[in-house]
Length: 289
Ligand code: C2E
Ligand code: MG
Ligand code: MG
Ligand code: MG
Image (cartoon, rainbow, N blue to C red):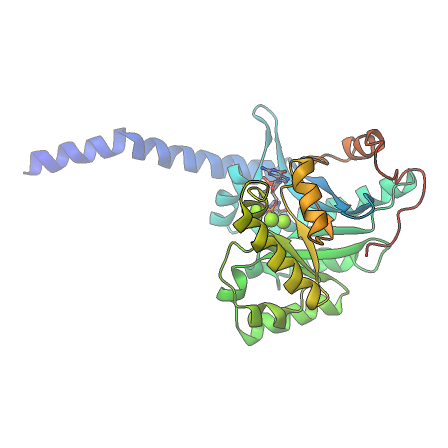
């Protein structure tokens, strides 16, 4: 028996579990080093007005420029950031680095009416996050926080509502991200008084083939419109999806059809190349709504 368990133990420590522990440990060491070496940067994905084709805003999305592995996406490092409790630190970096980018774009004649940041609900009150947001708010570019729908279920507390009020008092908008993927009540949702609902990519993706998905989008758009809340469709990849969304009254479109998330230099170049829509570099962009 002892022999057996001994053998098992050896197996555990030489097998895949050990490899996983080692690589998780290596990833956390690499992550801390990356913070130290300033390897996290914001990318920006354009958001397009469904009616006019104008640029109405950008969503900031974090990327890790790894010196040897190249560009890493949040799916590859967010879990480790969460484990190390360093998500607020990342959020702060993304906000702090976005402010001068907006400034440099403005100097080139590109005025972005709105910028939204993904903020984990648990860190809404984090002083780092609040400070960075406060410094950005009140400028020419409106600032929004995107909160995922599931937080409405987890965070139905008075404290959470107070944090939301504090955010709003700074002049920051609240948007609900990945809407339709969780199970928040409509009542809870409306109490948050969001400025926008972002319809989850998984609902948008099948709308061309699936009438059920189409009806779901229509229902969300009608619900939001009745409450004076804007709708943003995530993950728009085809012209046919865009046409249907426009027809159903969706306000803003975001997805690979228009642009993937781009870095500071790429974004103005990309917008200029999109000749088929209003060129924000030639005329000042109109107000967001
Ligand atoms: P999200 O906020 O729902 O962001 C949208 C994701 O969909 C982005 O992935 C974007 O690249 C991707 N996407 C956009 N258009 C399309 C499309 O047409 N087709 C497809 N298939 N995908 C599209 P990304 O950048 O990998 O980010 C993943 C998630 O990581 C985000 O989901 C967000 O929840 C989180 N995240 C990103 N940046 C930050 C950040 O700075 N702070 C925090 N706390 N979370 C972040
Ligand atoms: Mg988002
Ligand atoms: Mg989303
Ligand atoms: Mg998503």
